[in-house]
Length: 138
Image 1: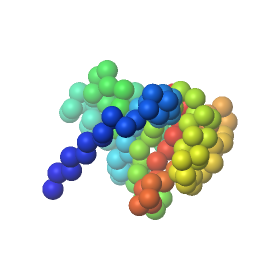
Image 2 (image 1 turned 90 degrees about the vertical axis):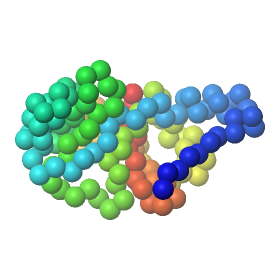
Image 3 (image 1 turned 60 degrees about the vertical axis):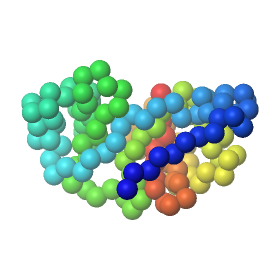
Image 4 (image 1 turned 180 degrees about the vertical axis):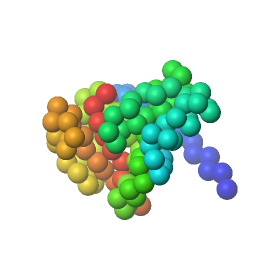
């Protein structure tokens, strides 16, 4: 069954449009579970012609050439319950988190330093159905 959603923008004020532009700006990656991320990377590269956007420990991302959205090849560890593996980017992550909180969005991980790189910050939030999303600076 297809879902067609339409947004009535007639009732949205200019300030609401501005808030939407300042918060989440794009999807960066979507996780796909694989048994071996290096073998999967070779398959996507060699068979589909994807470029390798990142090849670091536990962070292998492939995508069609020039794409700003990639596939994060996530090794055989199941994602945490509810974790979609979908990563959003925001130019001003602090303002985005504050605005989402103001709107009642529940965070499963507050904005803070990452476990893998202290110079990187991220937060995680969930939708009403418990689907968890990542939010990182652009």
